[in-house]
Length: 586
Image (cartoon, rainbow, N blue to C red):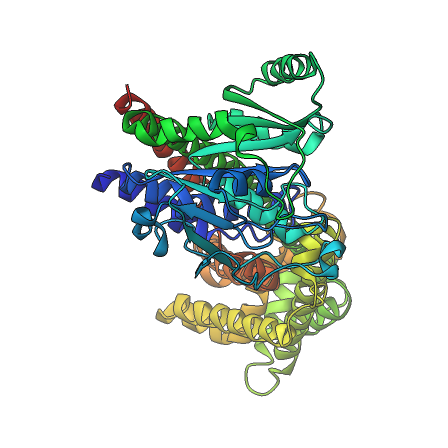
């Protein structure tokens, strides 16, 4: 096994161990099962076989309940080494039979590293023999592999008696499939009256898809003239229709067993001779091992591709949930801009306090005379009455806080409702009321608004630093001019520029604009308004993003990003490796 091959397998194994698939997207459970199966096949078969192509060929004997697998194994050895009987399931702990000289290949974790080794012998107690509870289907799979060194097993070959693939015990079914994935050659055992059962054909189709070398035994064929030929013809036709290529088909007649449950050795003579010849032909064993290995690696490539596709679906669902959350809060942000730009914030309490500042209730009479009266009124407040400007500033701030908190809260409600409409979103929202804003959010908004208003006042002071402008500024008051700039920002065309020329809010903004121009000049006012708008916009963006944070944090905590790309790369590398293995075997 080359360094590149090792890297390909190790990288895929690392990705399989780290795969998360955290969202309950359709197919997630099946994908996680596929990942576990792929990881198992890497450890149980692919990696050890690539590292030791000359190791004994592992023949896994599988089939349906009651097909007589264990009886056949015992007949091949000539002694009752594998449990058989009428109570199901019989084979609980798998039994591996090997020649004594081949024992070092199997005592360590070279194959099936997840199963502990137990050395058996003739008459050894079956520590994991099933009891009546096995028929419930709730038993756990075996955790050990029973090894038997047998002289009757030819060197270079090992037989593994697996549990029933359709066992009533869930654990046995899972173990049977794990052992079949570890096989170099699958020997499927069926019977004359059950060879059309659905479950074996499902497994055989899997073997065909993965180009596994398969031999089939039809057991218990009625000993009547012409029956064996008729059944074998029908079975062969079924195999061809299903695309299952079988190397050998063995026919075993129905035969009486002796008191120890043993078949006469003659009835399995053809099968025994086949295994003896196979064990003696090293080149044939290597051919079978490479073919099955290439098929297994191709199967892993297919698994990697399927997992990549599911990981991509996870990513798509993650993006959809993110877009739902950010979209809800983007809507909040737009509504905040609308509330600031449509003049609604410049009505009610804010309008009353602004009228106190400019000293008139006749706001809609000629703007030019209003500006003059406002300057006169503001000039009277320089020495002792700044309270109206401060009150107007506070009213503006309170109104802005209310709009931001209210619209962001609506965004949280919309985002929560959108998430709870899908299983993936519900799984993320579970255990927390995401429809409510985080604790302390309102205070964060108040602090941000105060900071912005402070920035506006500093902007006014900085712009009025020269002597002539400073005199005009002081004649009106920094707070009053700052409020005027805030008013202009709120009604600016940077927000919603439709229909603002009518109504008290628009007129209020015009007054503020004229006051600022009287102090700083037209160009300076545009520059100040732009700077103040950008400052406000940045703070509003950050505040609304803070409302979305609980949703996005849950998405960010999922992990599992970039899995699709990594697994797609694994699929390509594994497919290339499978081609190399086939080319080397030619």
